Length: 549
Ligand code: ADP
Image (tube, rainbow, N blue to C red; front, side, top):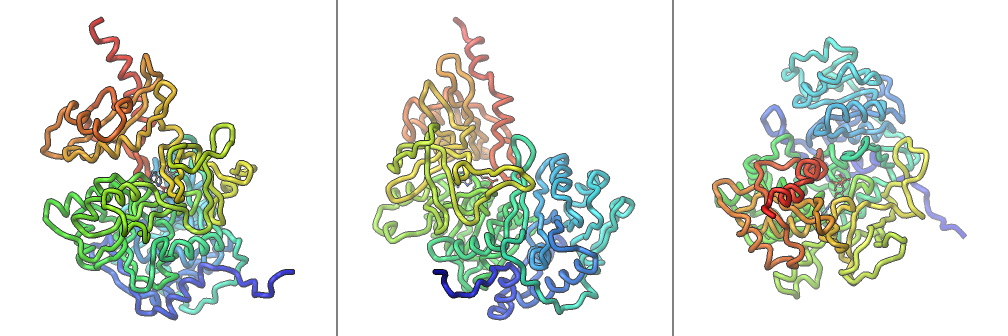
């Protein structure tokens, strides 16, 4: 027997309608590229999203058409999220940090009909405008006073100013009652190997992800929260916060392009966010600035750190210097992205700080809806003892089934292989050991490059650390540690090895440390280890050849 309840679709447009009606005065604050702060309410955002939906309809945008964005976090970007998806078109957020040829690839692959572009990215778009034939219209996200002189106007697309585009459009628009399996947004993976692949979220998956991520055991978002998503809206929809914040009527603060420590500190002081979200490199910059200027964060209760592993020193610094709790989270583009979160639990109140930091270093427990398992290469499930590790497999209603336009499923017996190697403990905490391709195989044993990096950045003279496994004449692979020193600090290889000796097993210690001025990152802020392995791959072989026999 079936239940007798309504089969009402879960639609993105209902989020903004709800916020506009019940939290009409909750604010959306944006640091604009024009330099000033823009603030308005959910009610205003809904009104302008409807204008935009009407303007898109007049431009003959149909349901299913892809609308690309090349934009920072800001109110206009937010309006596109709601207008395009709400009317049944598909919001395609494009990561402008990708290489131009990857941008061309994904715009063509998605067949974007329209592109919305922030002022910052106009020079980038100018370089590729003749290579993206599907794009008919480019909308520059500015008002008419800030329209730049651009060669885009001489290209094949029509170019229009955002505010002009929506100015005459009606504020009345009835959001269509779509089937909630309808595609709502598309994000491409960053494609460090091979071409980027499209992940298409549905209205249903987006709403379920929003419900699950807003609850107290997850991001704990209420109408009293103020969110500062530093994670970009061009990267897995800013971890879904434009939806989860709207669902709860929370205040949203968008930082625009100003992501350095000083700009973030100023914005935090002005807008008093309670919840920050971003990748570790962003917080390195902020913490450094706060330390140099003896500033303490007062409003911040929680910081969600994901995308790469949060080092212990960062977790400790937020706790001890700012009384702010780090919620370590893990996920991926293919997971909308949230998979696990380390929320503050009752047990955490009863253990020592040191024990709590160790727990926080793990990537948390699955949010309701996500299932995890670890398996070995033969597909056998590994024990949840916090020691055995294996390929991390996931399942859930906001996890990919197949890539955009792919003919075959992305699943293995109904599970998605994340490409990560992890442990699971008896309480369900997951710890990422490494990306499958980054784990270091030394003499038949495995070494976690992430654990070594985290231990290295705990040294006060280390600004950033990267560990790669490279060929070794005796052990197949051995770790090599690459270090960027903190400005003005001096430190030797032996100091660093000494520091690591108390943190990791002796056989894990890197055979060498190389000091570098910079480390390459992917478009999503992760260390680009492929390039480093190319550059330093022969380091131990060369050392051996050059050492006196
Ligand atoms: P995102 O950058 O939002 O996490 P991507 O799809 O670009 O999404 O990358 C996903 C990968 O990032 C994961 O498979 C994992 O390897 C890594 N990752 C994400 N969060 C963490 C974390 N907290 N600790 C370690 N690695 C992480």
